[in-house]
Image 1 (cartoon, rainbow, N blue to C red):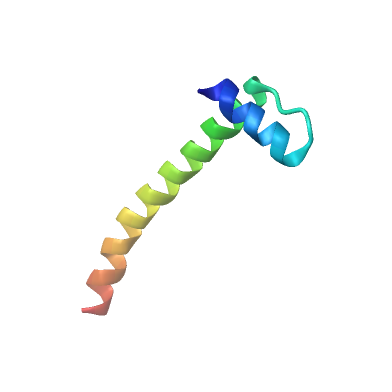
Image 2 (cartoon, rainbow, N blue to C red):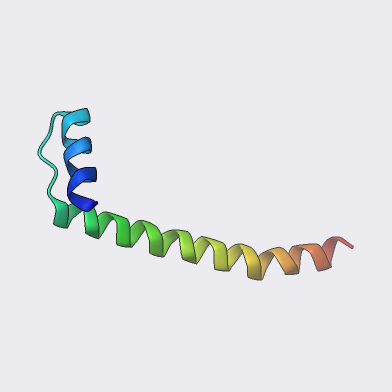
Amino acid sequence: MMAALAKAISRATRTNVDVEILKVIMIFSGAGLLLCLVAAMIYGQAINAALF
């Protein structure tokens, strides 16, 4: 699946995309998304308590 995704991105952007680079980008993107969701859950409750 990763190879197919890398091939599709390579065709779309006309650049050479390596599967390993794509894996690293996806890992950091997932970690950032997880961190944002955790922060939203923690601070969202504090904001709701302060408003009401």
